[in-house]
Length: 282
Ligand code: GUN
Image 1 (cartoon, rainbow, N blue to C red):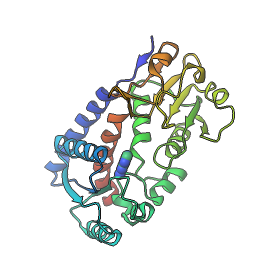
Image 2 (cartoon, rainbow, N blue to C red; image 1 turned 90 degrees about the horizontal axis):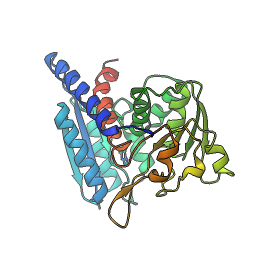
Image 3 (cartoon, rainbow, N blue to C red; image 1 turned 45 degrees about the horizontal axis):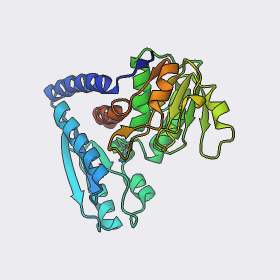
Image 4 (cartoon, rainbow, N blue to C red; image 1 turned 30 degrees about the vertical axis):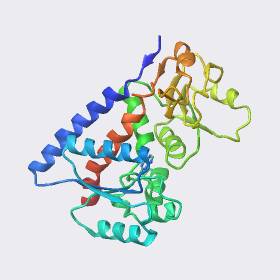
């Protein structure tokens, strides 16, 4: 029987720790405020943004919600970000992705002040992660490191294989595992002999974006399997990139979907919001 890594429970624990921190900060007269911007009404984004607002409320972080219409111009969005960058009472700025096609995502990410970029997407924060300097780290991979550490799973010296090379998950995941002294391989859609490579993994992070693609043929017996995917199946149930029923019996630990990696992303966003006070105060 594999250890089921309970992301919901671990994220609750982190949120409670943050709630206490925020309350202590408030006693010193320090408030944290997150601005959340959504452009358009993509239903999935609306759910994510709603969950972020709820988490802020629970922890005691102020949130400012900007719900802008789909047809909002790029300049209008950039002006709003410039205004929020300049506001002393705003510590974190999050622009929910994806943005409508007429807006240049890279330009928007680069316009957020790095010290308020709680998503950790700005090139300055990505560069800081790369060379081991302080900065914000992308929330999903940061959450995965927390899951591993709090589940007593050692990373140092282990063979870690990340499948997926996105800027938001795969690349920062590889850098974080490396920072923890893992031996890291990044595989992707053009990788040859994928199974041979993933079978080497002591820690296997699947961020392939394909429902149930990872079967036991890809997994070494006793591996730790982290599933970043989330997909809605025809029967309305959620599943991950990993075929859970097939893989669970042969691995030593696994994250379920839902209730694994997902809840950790928001917990780490909240962590970054609290951290933003420290970063801004130097
Ligand atoms: N869209 C999907 N995931 C994320 C995320 O972590 N941050 C932002 N801003 N948008 C997203």
